[in-house]
Amino acid sequence: MSGTSISTSQARNAFAEFVGTTLVVLAGPGLLVLGGDSIGSLEVAIGFGAAVAISIAVIGAVANPMFTLALLFSRGVTPREAVGDWIGQFLGGIFGAALIFGMNDTDRFSVGTNGWEPTSDVGVQITGFATAGTVIAAELIIGTLVVVVLLSSISQQRSNATMAAFTGLAYGVGALFLLNISGAGINPARSLGTAIFADTDPNALGQVWVFVLVPLVAAFVGTVVWLAIDDATIDDTIFDDTIVEDASDVFTGDTATGDRN
Image 1 (cartoon, one colour):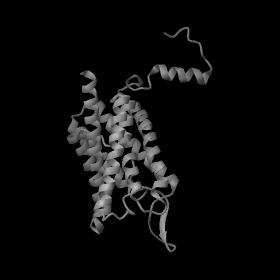
Image 2 (cartoon, helix red, strand yellow):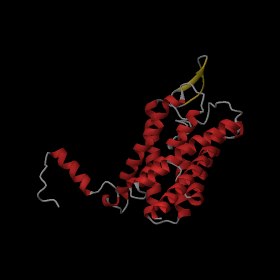
Image 3 (cartoon, helix red, strand yellow):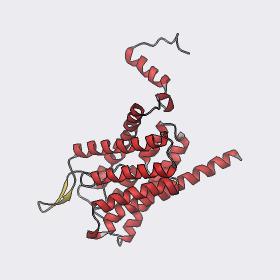
Image 4 (cartoon, one colour):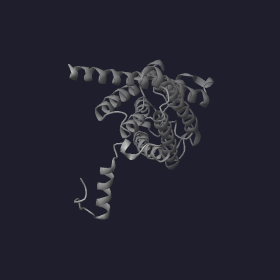
């Protein structure tokens, strides 16, 4: 019975992540693709932030593999729960992008995706993003800061609604900053989903690895920054003293274990 209960709980969590991530994709890229000229960067950023806040406070999902990895690092979820969440998130990202594709008369879209380098038409620049180095740096910085807000609001035992509001606000501000630089990634599931249905030059699917890898690095860096500014200690993370000491011993060449339990 206990095994069945655990499986049911994990399935519910995965489905919540699926629904939450679908909402994030519709509220961000969906506005860019379907909103027309009446939708600007501010409206898209608000859409992103509101969707994240609603997902956390109402649906019970973080709707972002970067957030789930940060929670795994900080012992907020178990590895098994994290895997279930990631499955739901990536499926939700793809499903949300498929809905946009369908509502766009099954035409692949050139906006709402992530990438770097300008796109041009007959030598005339019409749209595009910053250089690869700038994109990577910006995605890493913003992703790190949003992770810090999430972990700090949880550590300070804010109410679920307050934590959701702070995280959604940070995400929205980050998206506003990143939209003209990279298209606002900071969510591997959202980036992969839209890349699959995109028609861009350079090809979004060929560049999506950056928008999967960098947010995961940001989850780690954000956890480190959170430890530096919060009362939490490394023992509150999966990087406990034993792991750190073992790594230090390897680095220094000290493999003696006689004084260790």
